[in-house]
Amino acid sequence: MNAENKEANNVKKQKNERFVYQDDELIEKPFNWAQLRRLMQYVKPYSKQLLPVVLVMMVLGTLTRLAVPAIIILAIDEAIAPAQGEPSLSKLYMYAAIAFGLYIVQWAANTYRIRYTNLIGQRIIYDLRHDLFTHIQKLSFRFYDKRPAGSVLVRITNDVNALQDLFTNGVVNLMMDCVQLVGIVILLLVWNFKLGAAVMITVPLMFLVSSALRKRIRFAWQDVRIKQSRINSHLNESIQGVKVTQAYVQEKANIDYFDHMNTVNRKAWNKASMLNQMFGPVIEVTAAIGTLILFWYGSYLVQTNAITVGLLVGFANYIGNFWDPINRLGQMYSQLLIAMASSERIFEFIDEKPTVHQKEKAAELPEIRGDVTFDRIVFEYEKGRPALKGISLDVKAGQSIALVGHTGSGKSTIINLLCRFYDPVEGSVRVDGTDIRDVTIESLRSQVGIVLQDTFIFSGTIRDNIRYGRLDATDEEVELAAQAVNAHDFIKALPDGYETEVQERGSVLSMGQRQLLSFARALLADPRVLILDEATASIDTETELNIQEALRTLLFGRTSFIIAHRLSTIRHADNIVVLDHGWIVEQGSHNELISQQGVYHGLIEAQYRFLSA
Image 1 (cartoon, rainbow, N blue to C red):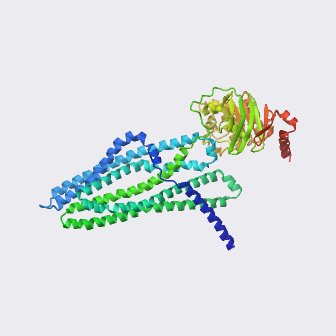
Image 2 (image 1 turned 30 degrees about the vertical axis):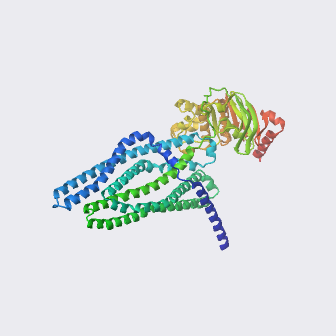
Image 3 (image 1 turned 45 degrees about the horizontal axis):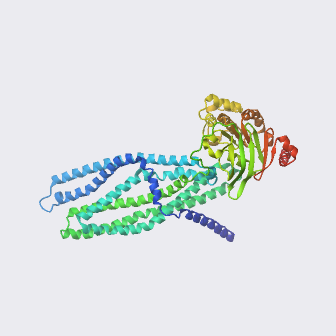
C-alpha cells in the first residue's frame, strides 16, 4: 500500500513539475521597454490635461517638501543656537510660521494632484478596457477555438485592473520622487560636498543588491498572472459544466483539481510577495548605514566647525526624505513589474490579428437575391486535416438546401464558411456571383440569419432577446415575430409577459422555449439567407409539429440551409446534400435519394430502426 501511495505521489509530483515548467517557459522574456512606451501611449491623449495642472501641483509639492528642512536649518542656526548672539524667539516663531505655511501648500497641492490623477487614470483604464473588448469582438472564431472563455475574461478584468495603480498615481509619483531625489542630492553636495558624498556612498550598494532581485520579481509576477488565468479558465468551465460534473458524480475530482491549481497559485503569489517585500529591508538597512555614516562623520565636522549643528540636523532631515522616495521607487518598480506582466497579456490579445481579414476597400454587399455558390472548397481547421475536400455546390435564390451526414462530415463547416466565420484554404464562396471576401463582413452577415442548436439567451427581457435580431424593431414587430413561430402564447403566460427578465443563457426557460425565441429573433432580422443548424434538435415532437407551418412561412422566398439529424424535418427540402468525410457523395430530392438506395437511404433506414427499437 505504501509503495502504491509513493508511486501515486511521484506521478502527481511529475505532473506538478511539468505544469510549473510549462509556465516558466511562457515567462522567459526580457523586460520590454518598447511595450512600456506603448502602454504610455494611453496617457498621451490626456497629456494636455495632465501636464499643465498636475505638473504644476507636482513641482509645487516637491519644492515645498525640499524647502521645509532648509527652514529647519535656518531656525536652528539663527534662532535656536546661533553662532553669534542670543537665541531669538521671534525668529523661531517666524520660521515656524513659514514651515507651517509650506506644509499647508504641500497638503493642498498633493490633495488636488491625487484627485486629478485618479480621474485621468480611470479614463485611461476605460480606454484600455474599451480597446481590448472592441478588438476581441472582431477576432475570428479560430481565436476562440484555442482559448477557454475564462482566459479571455481574465485579460479584460484582472489584467486591466492590475494597471490601475500605475495610471492613477504611479506615473506622477515616479516623476515626483525622481525630482525630489535629484533636488536632495544637489542640495547635500552643494552645502557640504564631503558629507554629501559620504552619505551617498551607500546608494550604489543598495542598487547593486536590489538589481539582483528585479529579474526574479518580474518572472514571479508573470507566473502569478498565468496561474490566475488558469484558475479563471477552470472556474468558467466548472460553472458552465456543473450539470455534467454532478451528473457523473465528479465533484470530488473537480474539487481536487481546483485545490491543486489554487495551491499552485497560492505558492506563486507567496513567492512573488516575498521577493517583493525584500525591497523594504534592503532600503532600511542601506538607510541605517547611511544614517550611521552621517552622524559619525557629521559629528566630526561639527566638532571641527566645518558645519553647523543646524546643517547636520538638516542633513538628517534630507536623508530621511531621501530614503522614502528610494523605498517608493522600489515599490514602484514592483508595481511596474506587475503592470508589465499584465500588459504583456493584454497586448498579446490586442496584437492578435483576425484570420478572417476584411479588405481595406471592401465594398458593401447590396441587397441580395440569395444565389449561393461553393466553388471547389478546401478547408482545414488543423493543417493537414481537411474538413472539406474540394466540394462544389450551386444554390439558387429561394431554394432550401438540407445538409445531412454523419458527425464530422462537414455540414457545419459549410455554414461557417458561408457566414465567413472562417475562410477556405482553396476555392471561393460567392453570393449573387460576388466573392464574399470582396465585401464587408458586416454587410454579408446582416443578410444571413442563423439559428443554432445551442441558442444563446442574454440577460435581459424576453422582448430584448427577440429584438437582438434587429435593434430598431418596434414592440409590435417583436410580438408579430413571436406569433409567427408560435412563441407568443408561452411568452404571454410568463409572469411579466414580454417584459419577463431572464438570466444568462435563459435558465428559467425550457430548451424548446429558448429555441422558439431564437426562431423569433431570426425572423425579426428578416435575412435573405437563413441557416438552421440543428435548430429543431432540442424541441419535442409536438412542439416541432406546431412550428412546421411557421417554418414554411419563414423559409418562403428565402435561400435556406438546414442541418438536421432528424431527417423527417428536411424531406421537403428542394435539394438534400449528403456529405461524408468532407465530400459530397449524393444530392437530390428526398424521393430521388431514396430511389438510389445509397448513403441517404441508409441514414433513413438507420434512423427508423432506432426509433422503432
